[in-house]
Length: 279
Image 1 (cartoon, rainbow, N blue to C red):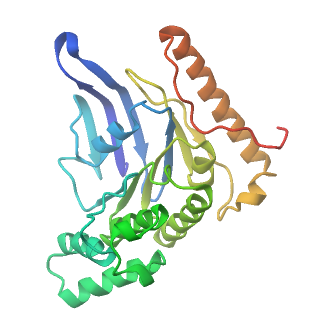
Image 2 (image 1 turned 135 degrees about the horizontal axis):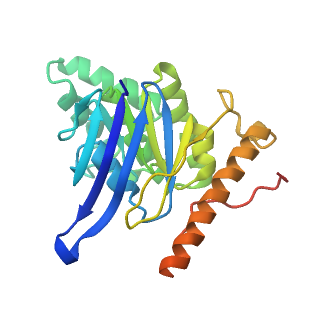
Image 3 (image 1 turned 60 degrees about the horizontal axis):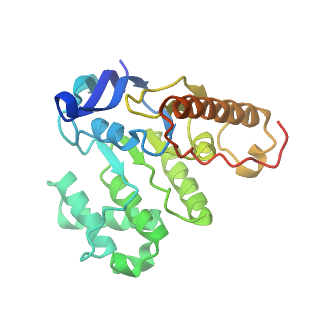
């Protein structure tokens, strides 16, 4: 039995002549402990896909199953890290995390909850800022709070909706490493939504492109045959990295050209700036 499974999922908005078909014929299987990345174009329906998996949306047709049971509403079993942090501005770092763990562990004592908060805030290296409010933090620090909050709830699956897209390159790279270090400790099932091909290759076991909409659907999977732990510098000289990266970029550019020729609409490609090496 798959840990997460989407069977023939369609999602549309509106009715009759005003209907907009966002996702079409989505079939996805993720096994327990896997780290899967979905990479796609801006506006292709990636966030809609995330909201179907975390239970914020219901499919128009088809099934979303988690551990064999239909997904009905949100659950602490599936922790979500959003791109926009979603922190309560009037609460401190510690209080933002505390609210989440109190909801997830209602039977734990206040002392146990505070210890859990402190442990996870420390895990993302924010203990000195535990009493600061979001406006006093940088973008990278806010995202680390969001990571701590999601993981402190001890989810069985981590869902990340482009969580690092708005960060500078250095902060983004550091948080990639932090998320991987946390994931590697107990190999929780992870799904990363990203528009950065290199990020997907560095972090995931498999990459699956999401074709641009309307009627967006998943493309072929690309397995990442690179041993863990991965070193970003060494990866540039890894033949499997070069081969996989070039194959994904070629596929994305092809479907982008096809869609553009059909609709004459310009789509924003994922971040696929060429590397200095020669394939």
